[in-house]
Length: 282
Ligand SMILES: Nc1nc2c(ncn2[C@@H]2O[C@H](COP(=O)(O)OP(=O)(O)O)[C@@H](O)[C@H]2O)c(=O)[nH]1
Ligand SMILES: [Mg+2]
Image (cartoon, rainbow, N blue to C red; front, top):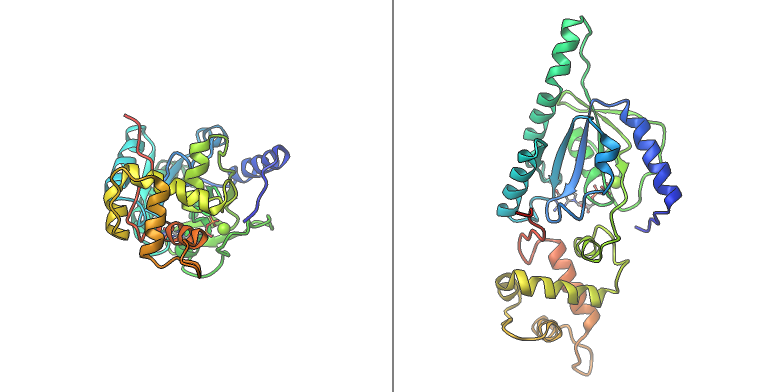
């Protein structure tokens, strides 16, 4: 993935989303359950206005149960519908469908009273790159209709993807830009792979990840790699992991690239554990 978000590009994106918005009944705002703050687009509230929406915490299989619950409650307290799902396995999809129909119920009844025949609920999916938009479309459609992967889809003519669940999806999800101004946000996005390794080289990124894990989840790090954290430097921890995992060069030196790849890859796959990096503020 290599999208450069220029002001002009952002303006076009926004305009195209606003145009599509008028064609749908509700919006699915997809965010990453591991980083619900960092993966939200800064101007989404502004774009959506009063359009009914459901906040979908995707990749909840990679986030902690405690975190998932905390975030659902947080949004619900703010009177926003929120649901944790795993778009890959389909977990949570039934609840999402139920909520979608609930959200449309008032309008459905209004239509009925006016004698208008109700069609399926029309939905647009919005989210930053790699958050799982195409995966969700595929899962809802139960067929491979949207390409998954890292290339953003260039807008074709819009089509409605029918699902079994009384929903119709706009086939082109809205790709929102991430908020990369804040350094911490940039790191979170890079850790999770939302922005590929654009902000830092992989070794520095892996070192930053070790720092974050050693401070917040030392037990998980210890359990996965069998290293004591104590008062070691982050570089020492990385080197020890390298030795334990055989990431060594010919002369026996640490292969920093290899160990960095191991750590980043295992974090992104959830192998180090189900880790939520951001919690709601008190
Ligand atoms: N573990 C996990 N991986 C997911 C989930 N949803 C999507 N992915 C993966 O995340 C990556 C990006 O997904 P994609 O649908 O292409 O994102 P898009 O850019 O928003 O369309 C792919 O490798 C998916 O397999 C999920 O709920 N759990
Ligand atoms: Mg996609």
